[in-house]
Length: 243
Image (cartoon, rainbow, N blue to C red):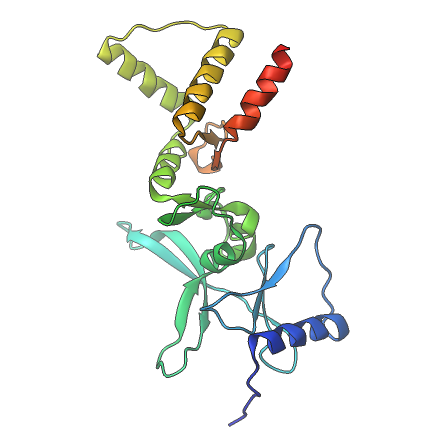
């Protein structure tokens, strides 16, 4: 059996840098970053925010191709509509390899915890079912992922489940059934109302969250994101514009 020298994380980092510089013919893309994977992933794994996973385990760098599987509840014809890309790695004293989803490796290494929550889920901005089985790196690149609190992820998933026109129709029905008054606001009035709401949020110490979705008639094409608004910055800009 062939044996490899055991390296520390620091030694693997140096080894990877040396191989990339001297023997591996790889052209970095614009904005690309490559970092050493954090624990519990192997120290010889190095991941790119563009969706590539490299291994420095042997005598040369290898690009690890993710496995693909269909996921979700089976349809009547026995097929599954969801999909996932995953990697495998060996754990000492374990009989079977550990499986880890590609998007989780990417998220653990690159995604910012923008909301500061400990109960997070990983969100795909462009839906996974919009990608072909061969497009794992495009689907799971860092820029297509967000780390969101469970409740915010639930809300965002709902907003992305229907076209904008359907959501508006539902809202109109709710207002009608609740027998609530409705008002027509000008752009200036709406902006004043929004600034007042942001001011109240800032005073109360709350968090303002902005949900954005693509306006399209095809629900499959909807891209959805959620971000924390910098309320202080917005209010400051508004005051400067009013002076």
